[in-house]
Length: 174
Image (cartoon, rainbow, N blue to C red; front, side, top):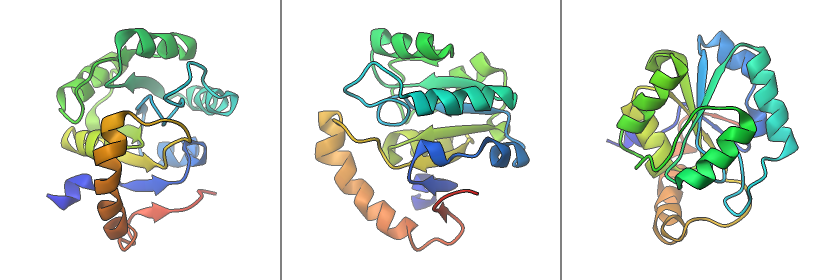
């Protein structure tokens, strides 16, 4: 069961994701979590450096989308700005929303990555859907109250075990 909580990769920022490396792994699509992964939960503006990464991924031919537990209004505002299909009110970690996103992208699970900041929603759900999971350290800013009070404390236990796993990369990609 613990294996389902481990990402394939763990990096300190979404900006450390190298599209060339993802391509070399045979990946063709990337599904992003929204809050504290590509945009701060307390903001409606995507940081310019994230927009630059998304643009680079598009130039490399990646199909991109968003899966979020947040409201239609918030998700669509960011998805429209980034010109990406999105699944809102996803009820992650259920696998169904990830399958819907795969249909929107036209990719299969083995050729799609999931990038998220939470182990018990993003990574668990992505692993159950058969995706290549990438955990990022959350952006600074507010967390949803349930995340702050429950999930982040439990994540510390998993992260302590994760740090002992050499097959999960920690650090910058060159």
